[in-house]
Image 1 (cartoon, rainbow, N blue to C red):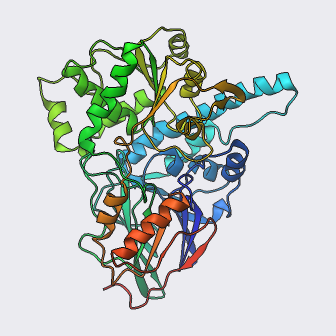
Image 2: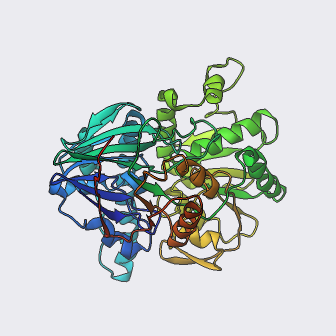
Length: 476
């Protein structure tokens, strides 16, 4: 048995881990890597293995840095099943189509600029046709239901509380009559976040021998969830005084709905009922429709709001407008403030938000409100670092707009929440902890905290690194 880390190793994007059991290869996630454009293109277009050799994919959730390269995998020969929760399957149907559309349109936009400069064309990573060839491979599975991935790998999903349909994985690996249990947290959510249920401990009622854990915020602490409303209201109120245009880059899945839900609560309290809010992302509109269809993933508070005749739709309050049409999106660039526009992508690397930022960042009266993690070398990270000049579509723009970062909206567990979750595993039984999906400094800080808690053999594997899985005494 062998585990090899092919992505999200010492970085937070491109999640992809390979299991080799009984001669078969299984992928845990198959995400797109975000970073410097040339490096990202090279990584995403060339897999470090032969795609036809993969027997199956087990997908933790629908975010593009976990699911986004599945059409590329299929384009290059993979034809096996893709296992995920039902909500993840529904989300991927709209997200992967949108991803292909954005890649095609961005390539078209960049090529117009390249033609003027005599530079060669770029091609999209995959097309909408590749996505349509991928979707029939998805297999929806219920939470808490064991299923066979291959003859050698059995899996069970539990709610990770990160986004709609997100899952942690418990895997039983069997080879030569010896078995071992491996858990993968996926991206772990925070307790008490709005809309979704809290994370379910993946080790409940079973023993775990090996653990792969995310470590995105392994050395950082979030503001309490209870402060989300006030944290959001304070900068908006400040921006309103100067009639600012407020751009909120947000992932279409999870973060956009959380922001809208929080704005809804502020609206019914009369605190922002006079400011227009635009969700400018066809994907976000489609994803919000998916949310409404998967209330089984909601917490009790959200279910009560949805079923109460006294409450308005929390995803569609009075001053909120969803935009699909491209011309309406362009009109926002000419609109005078104050207003809020929420647009994807969350790291500002593609989609309509990039165009909005191009029309926003050089005006000191405007505001960019960052509500999620920004990976190194992305436009979002450069905004967070408040670099004086940022490149957007290859053109320099002076950064004069106010940039505000809110960490209470993070969908990832922070240091305390990660340690609290992992401490529930049996430290004497756990042979190895692999920390992934985190910059190296964050993984190392989390490792130090886990060592203080009594855990041993903790590593932060590099991309391509292999780790043997020893069944030892086997499953109890």
